[in-house]
Length: 273
Ligand code: AMP
Ligand code: MG
Image 1 (cartoon, rainbow, N blue to C red):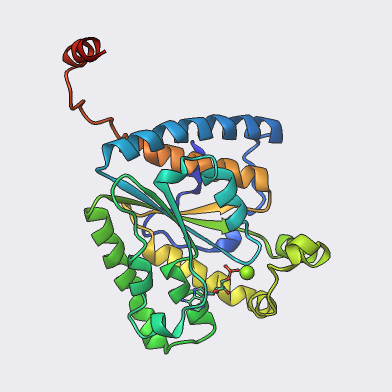
Image 2 (cartoon, rainbow, N blue to C red; image 1 turned 180 degrees about the vertical axis):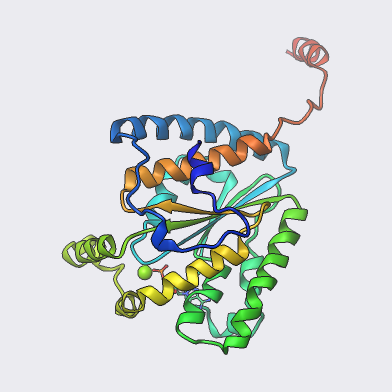
């Protein structure tokens, strides 16, 4: 079984995140993983080139995780090597007052990818059924309606040619503690730390329930959720790269037909000099 299949959540399946391993490495050694990652990146560069040239489809990658789950390092490690002309990244933090004066999808919809592009969401509209639910930022009746609204939204994007890939970087609570301690110890990491991170950590179990619901209710055939083991960086990068590679290989974008006749163009080049 490919890693993409292994970590894809079956639509309609019950989700209990305690049953998903966060430190799995599927029997892959680190050096093998690093070689495979390099190969996947090579393949992704070529696939991205075709996607960009074709300009018929696009890809939206939603990254969600608890604090220190590795969203930023995944973006650097997997999307960093791609052609920056064809990739956009948007991070969604706490909404501004202006954003909050619209429906919850408004700020997100503006950043969905146009044809030919890969768009990465560092957090996303899912925060509106995660932090918003756990912190009770809106009434229960409001967030409960949002799963269906999200499904309709993602369906509309799919119809418009966007392939959606949703990845939950699954970090264990123990590993988060290590990584937060590391942040506190290192001056160049300290800036990432927010007092609110403690509140989130304290409510770990509620977040796991909210994640499980979002993944179960919004995992569809056309916009699947993947639960990727995130405790080990090298394995996380491998798994994410494999999922994206498998997705783009399935889309199989093609270079467009040439606008010119090659013989004729060569003749013109000779003639003009
Ligand atoms: P970071 O990703 O570490 O920069 O943190 C961004 C913060 O914004 C996190 O604490 C998120 O929970 C929070 N956030 C993102 N989207 C929303 C939202 N829709 N409502 C409330 N908080 C949000
Ligand atoms: Mg943070």
